[in-house]
Amino acid sequence: MPSFGAFPIVKRFSFSLQLLLGLVVGVALGFAARIWDLAWLATTLTEVGKIFVQLLKLAVPPLVFTAMVISVANLRNVNGAARLAGKTLFWFLSTALIAVIVGIGLGLIINPGQGVTLSTAGAKAPENVGTWVDFLTGIIPTNIVTAFTELNVLQIVFLGIVLGAAAIALGEKAEPFLNFSRSILELVQKALWWVIRLAPIGTAGLIGKSVATYGWDLLAPLAKFTLGVYVGCFIVLLAVYPALLALVGKVNPITFFRNAWPAIELAFVSRSSVGTLPLTQKVTIERLGVDRDYASFAVPFGATTKMDGCASIYPALAAIFVAQVFNIPLGVGEYLLIAFVSVVGSAATAGLTGATVMLTLTLSTLGLPLEGVGLLLAIDPILDMIRTATNVAGQIVVPVLVARSEGRLDEAVLNAPPQPLDEAPVSTPRPLGEPVLA
Image 1 (cartoon, rainbow, N blue to C red):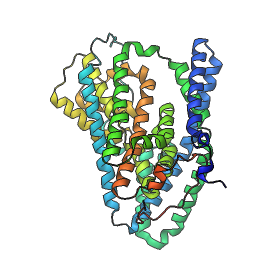
Image 2: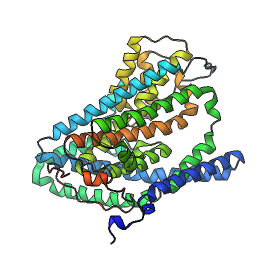
Image 3: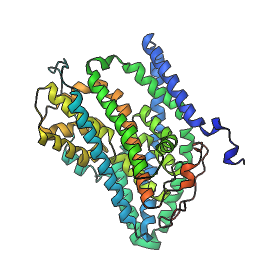
Image 4: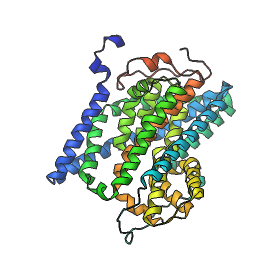
């Protein structure tokens, strides 16, 4: 078996290059289908993308559940477990607050709803409206089977935490269950490596379908708002996160993005934090050097609650947009309320309909017309690309920051040339209490 240094440079970056090639091919095929009205090509791209996302999501329930059970059970002999969880939650909330401030600031600068000539007569409120009751009741499943079949990740995380804690309480009696969970986790991870190899093909289908279906025609009347969302996400993605990585985590931002890029790129084209979760967890552990047991807790938890794009930047800008379109003035109190809803209510996106439900939660709390959501639904797929990429980047940044502060970041893995993700071996999990040697 040749050493890592024996691989040529193209081999080391082959997965990212293949994803990029899939992106380019998908855009080309999508425009071809749209320009020449090739319905069969558009249908093919749609089905290819749909099958790929289904394969990713198929592995998510057992992956999240077993990872949560094992990671919680591994905390039994660790004195700093509560501190790890507390730091993770602190950075989730802090980065969400920064993101919503960016969104509000941009909204006040560009005034996305001023001068927009859209008819609000035909706008309708969405059928599924996010409420605080949905947020609170959505955490606890009413039916265990439904939590898995409907892919409610937050409920699966809840079940994993509860059973992991119960395993700690039972002690030796729970070992057969934990051993079974470890076996399932290893099997799912192995199967996921095969799915990951299909990512370039899935990327071509997903981006091609978006271009063929939506093109860029829908952006014209909402160009200022669309630009605001992309600029806001880029500020967080390329300025806020790098600053935190460099100043707090003492991690080179270029090294971070080089290692995390495949997950961010897949998030952009798949528009699904949950669908990207397997790859997100893989790059966090095997490319960025975050402790496996901690990452198995932080990454799935972040995939359900860490939504800087969908739950912070977007609803802040969208609320200002809707208020200006309907000529409703907003004061300091309303802006503070937007910040509060975005930071505290981001978990409301889990198990519901993503950014749309988060926006209805924000608008209903502010007393703004819910019909405003209907004005933005047409361009939502285009906006969702950059929102999801920002979400996933934040879901990786926070574990890196926490792992660094706790001495649980493996410098050798972080600074090594990026491993080919489809060939990286699955390392044996260490006990969470064992320190990482730099």
